[in-house]
Image (cartoon, rainbow, N blue to C red):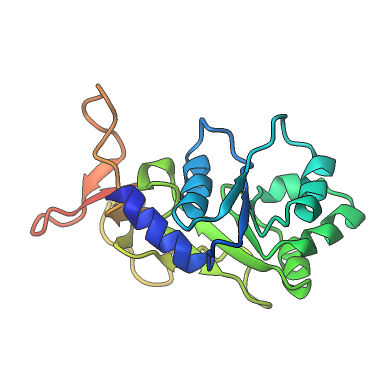
Length: 205
């Protein structure tokens, strides 16, 4: 159910089609690799898997040689690109970011180059991502967006654990279809809680 939800959401968020090609950047040990595979293979798109560790030159060459349309690259990695290398990202149709803080400079440059920038957020426990936003010029680069389909979020105060009022800081809680059941052979499952004693909705903090 979680993977089906992920497939449906990523198809919508990234406008996937059979003519697209996704660059497999993430190591198979990490949850974002599942997102890359799911968004490509569930839509009949191509998935490019390099036979070597990541190289900036090889990646930029692949954009041209294999017509890469979608890539999930950490902002910190792209920050290390030279200006000339960053310019070549314009060959992408979608740059999906997450896991690290996105700089305003990089976001604005990509958007002005015609690249769609999608900000994803979500811990591994929520099946790759639970919040998403298609960024636009003049958006704040750290805007995490809204919950995806079949997901819900809430915030609670750090100290009292009560629901946090609007426009205040607090701890983010995430629940929904993508939330995993717990950790194998680990009890209690630290980080999981019940949001409301009436509806027993499980959430992850």
